[in-house]
Image 1 (cartoon, rainbow, N blue to C red):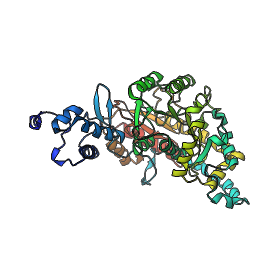
Image 2 (image 1 turned 120 degrees about the horizontal axis):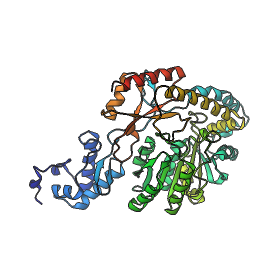
Image 3 (image 1 turned 90 degrees about the horizontal axis):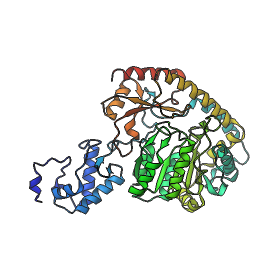
Image 4 (image 1 turned 120 degrees about the vertical axis):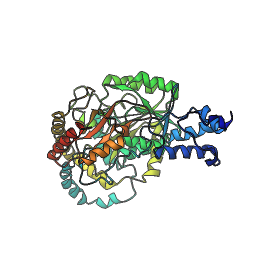
Amino acid sequence: MPVNSFLDYHMSWKPEKHQLKRPIYLSLAEKLEQDIKSGLLAPGTKLPPQRELADFLDINFTTITRAYSLCERKGLIYAITGSGTFVSPNAKLPITISMDNTPKNLIELGFIASFEQCNSMVVETVQEVSRKKYVEQLFGYDDPTGMQHQKMAGINWMKPFGIEAGPENMAIVSGALNALAITLYALFEPGDKIAVDTFTYSNFIELARTFQIQLIPISGDEEGMLPAELYNQCILSGIDGVFLMPSCSNPTTVMISQQRKKELAKVIQKQNLILIEDDVYAFLSAGLIKDYEGSMYQFIPDQTIYICGTSKSICSGLRIAYMVFGEQFREKILKGIFNINVKTSSFDAEIITELILNGTAHQIVNEKKRLAECADKLYQDRFSSHGLNEHPYSFHRWLPISSKLSSEHLEDRFKEHGIQVFHSDRFLCNTSEHKTFLRVALSSCSTLEELENGLHILKNALEFL
């Protein structure tokens, strides 16, 4: 079809052909990324069908397919079978959440810390470890996956979560996010597909973009991801893995029920998927939640990468996490650790080990549980639950809101009121969702009084949206 016949034809995106350079698919992908990040193409915009765009530009259909595929792998766009291709809801802005460049004058209700006032309970053990006769051995390159006694302490720490593993099938790495990066690097290829909850951990979304791994959102209910929907997407999309936070989902706080864990495990086993189980909040469930019976790892250990970080449970500044993996993954995971980490700090690992062995870690957990209960009461006094299977001791809450403001403008509006809080678009993965929420951190203020003030400001600000 002649190009000029499209001059008056409505299309959501009309790139100029004379601006494209060879290779055309790469130049077209760069132009699409530029127009998305500049705001020319808003989140949720439906892009022209591939054949229609090919006719408009008078180029080969497969060139459009390659350009769209490249942007899809970067997480900029997503496709829904039978509906079309759309701009991702969080494609415009970086969504990684950290404390970097956070204004000091704001009350922090965005970033989820871990009741940092408990860090004083770690100091005495740090001093004891520094005085040990063998402390110099902790500063070398030896034992890149952790010392034997450190691994055994980690295995004992994870037993209440249903983890049974030998030291040869576990490693100590530099935090849960580091474990996730190692897993994606070691076990997945660009273009692979991982199933996630519709709202999922924003830093995992960014990691997937970095490794050009496509995330496929799976709908869920109050018990977690729906097994039938996971199975359907396996058939339709060719899923390679699944990422779940069963004990307490970030951001929704949903706990996956024991029955749902079993049902999901059956689908994962049957479809030969890799389960990435981020169980950073298991410490708030084992022995505390009535119906908690352990991790999903216990159902499919040979297909699971189990990750147990200690930043939330013990100390955030000591970047330690335990990775447990099936024998089939051992060689690739170890290679990934050596290539990305070289090794994790043995000194930090020794402090965590000593905290576990001398009982201080359990005292810290008890204190954080107490603080979580107090923080949740402050929240419940102002905001009601939205009916999902929320974790009662969660360090954050998922607050439904009604607002037509964009996520960027809404977050800026809260900053003007003196608080930082994050919009649900940061966590929305490759789909359209009309419901909007705020993720409200309850564990980041230095005192409960500061948290109470922040929640008061939040409630008042919401009334004027």
